[in-house]
Image (cartoon, rainbow over all chains, first blue to last red; front, top):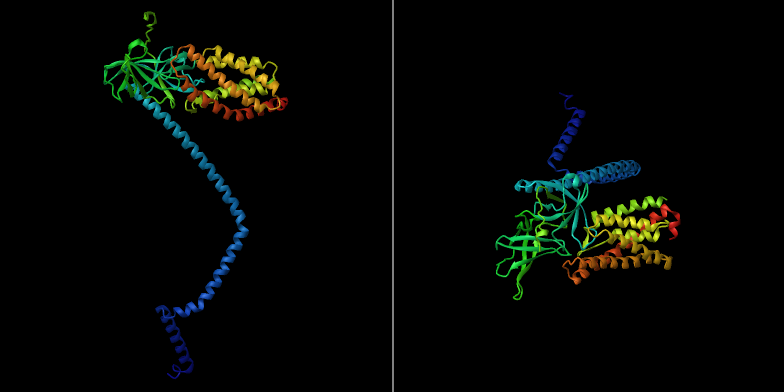
Length: 278
Length: 167
C-alpha cells in the first residue's frame, strides 16, 4: 500500500492523467488553436520543401517524360489520322451506297426497262456545251441515243460511245429539246436547254392554264425518250398577246452540277423520225 | 527526247484534271481551262524541236474527247502554238508576261470560236449571257490560274532539260 502511493507512482499517475486529459481535449477539439499555432509553420515549411523537391525532380526527369509523351502523342496522332481517313472512306462509301440504293430503288420502281448503272467521270471542256462522260461504253451494251436517267429524273441521252466510255448530252444543252407533258394542265410542250444550263419551256398553247410548280414528264413523242420520266417543275410562265405559245422557265429535278451516277436505259429503242420530218 | 515522253503524260494529267475536277468548278457558268493553260505554258518553255507536232497530237486528243468538232481544238491549239512562238521571239526575257498575254488572247479566241460555232449550228443563245456569264468569268479564272500553271510547267521544264531554265 505504501508502495502504491509512493512519490514515483503518484508522479506516473499524474503524467498519465495529464496525457489522457490532453488526448480527450484534443479529440474534443479544444486544442485545435494550439495545434494550429504549432503545426502551421511546420506544414508550410514542409509544403515549401516538397514543392521545391518536386520541381527539382521534374527538372531532371521531364526530358525523358517529354520524349515518351511526344512519342505517345505522335502514335495517337497517327491513329487519329488513320481513323479520320477511315471515316472519310466510310463516308464516301456510304454516300456511294446511298446513290446506288436510290438508283436501285428507281430501277425497281420502273421494272419495265433494263438499266445499266454508270459513274460520271468528267464534264465537257467547253463551258458552252452541257455534256458529261460516263465510265460505261459499247463493251457494256451502251449504244448511241439511249436515254439516261437518275433516280430523280431525266438526264439526257447518249451522244457518243467508245469501248469503255460514253458521252452523254444533257437536257440542259442548248441544242437539246425534250418533248414533255404538263401533268396538271395535261398539255404537251417542249423544253430547251441553254448555254448556261438553264431549261426553258416552250410550245405551250395560249389557252393552257399552267401553274407554278406544275410537274413536267416526258411525253414519249418523237420516240427519243420513254414516256412518264420526271423532267422538272414549272418555275414561271410568260404569256404575250401577240405570240402563238406561252413560254416559261423550268427547274430541273436533277442536280446536274452534282451528278455522280446515272442509269442508262438499255432496252429502249430510239425511233428515228428524221425521214418523216418534212 | 525525254520531253517527248514527259509532255504527253503531263498533258494527259492536265486533261484528267480538267474533265474530272476543274470543269465542275464554275464561277457563274465559266470555268478555268487547265488544258489551254498547260499548252500555252508548254509552248513557252519547251525546247523540243517539233513542238508543233506535239501540239497537233494534243489537239487531236482534245478533239476526240470533246463534243466540239474534231478540227476545232486541233486548229485552235495549233494557233495557240503560233501565237506563243511569236511572244517567245518578241518578249523572250519575260515568260510570265508572255504567259499572261497568251492566256488572255487565247481565252478570248477560244470563247470566240465556241460562240461562232454555236452561231453556225443555230443554237439559241444570247450574246450578253455568253459574254457576262461564261466568257468574263472564264477569262478571270484563266488569268488567276495562269501563274501556278506557268510555275509548275517551268519547274518541270527545268527538271527535264536544264536549258529550259533559261526560257
